[in-house]
Image 1 (cartoon, rainbow, N blue to C red):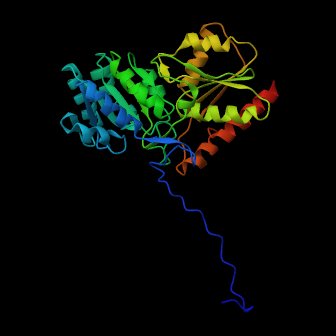
Image 2 (image 1 turned 45 degrees about the vertical axis):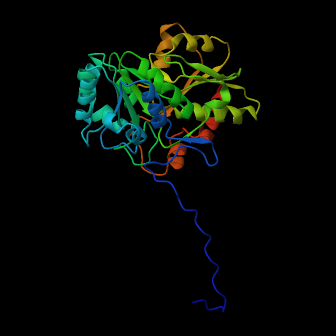
Image 3 (image 1 turned 90 degrees about the vertical axis):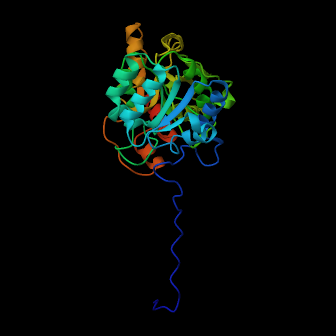
Length: 341
């Protein structure tokens, strides 16, 4: 009770965190999104192609495969929490002429099912499409769910194609493209309310191709996944300070579009910044650096990626800022690198 006869001032209301750390959207507040682009694209594809089947390891809702299950219950297989069985069954279906889309979390495919993917799918070059949610730092639930090393793991596996889409449009167009590809594909899946970014850039997905989204003479961002979205945001912010930044989106990590990357790097005088939602070990940055050195290029080169560490749990905006992949941190780091030169 107050001894002054006045009621104490009320504490300011705290803003409630309204998103789960597990399924939090990567979309900024007010950003345009489309719901479940993977699930809806797969349904549209399955209407035209009876070979399409869907499988999941008890994660249909969290990989948007529940959309497909409702539309095609006779072509949907719920394998339970058994990722090795999931991949083995997908391999068997592929041998019988089907085109299976197998969904789970990226950490479970890369870590728990690796040998089954390698031996049953990749070695046999079977057309299994492995679509995995929560790639990189797209969940706040800590190392057990953060697939910060998945690209490195699958880049080392022969005969598998790796796709890291940026947004809803990328996913919608990637689904039929990877289904048509004669071989296994690993797709880093964005699920739920997925940002719609690339519609404004006259963009179309082509498997194995990188695309220039914007031009700029001072910086060249080479990016994939959600870091393309961040690179575009950073480029707009840098433009306000007189810094012109180009963005080259490389949704296919393996095989890498080396020809386009070299052509863009050869445009003289630009700082090259590779940006990815993955560990700095074994991902897009190392793939680009290897391609540059192997072809006699040595530009000013910097790398924005997650650290070689097990990451913290927490709210995604906090983690993205902490680990340097938020838009503000990309702008800050890029300006610092330009000032060094």
